[in-house]
Image (cartoon, rainbow, N blue to C red; front, side, top):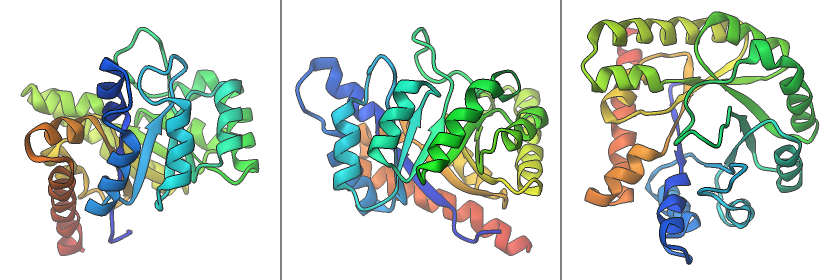
Length: 253
């Protein structure tokens, strides 16, 4: 177990606010620098095909101006692979993408998309980029991630978080067990395990107690909370929640 759980802060929705009106404010790169000062271990940004939030110049500036790892979320397309190879982020997380969705609705279907994903994974790795696949925690998806050569998986936590928030106890318990078992299976197969989507203070604290998970990526909740308490305070509160969850693992072990 890694005693320290990394926090990646996603700045996409700072760009969403900027783009709603146009211009340069608020600047996601400024938000990234503030997030790092508040305790983020890395910055995540998703360059979508339709450029609905993060733009190409945001990615270039993030790579040039921040002093922590940049995790470039992207679809497994020729265009995005070419941008990643040119930009050379620390990491690239391959995610599913549809123009009709408000946000990423689920994980990649690696079983069915292996022929498309394997070349993208190989090209990114060839260029020294740490590759992860954003997937559901089903064992067949985890095993397919190994077959296409990905060294990292990020488990989609959105369905669990929604069930917790809406008080659907039975569904929340079933989703939690899937995530718990999935993290264990991925770790057994030699994969580095991350998690993200929909996490708030409570769910982040809970999932931090899974010793196999070494990184959480959180964005929308933190940007929303920043309206009320400031981004730096929201990140510090998230860091404390994660540390409380991790401390339970150490206490048990």
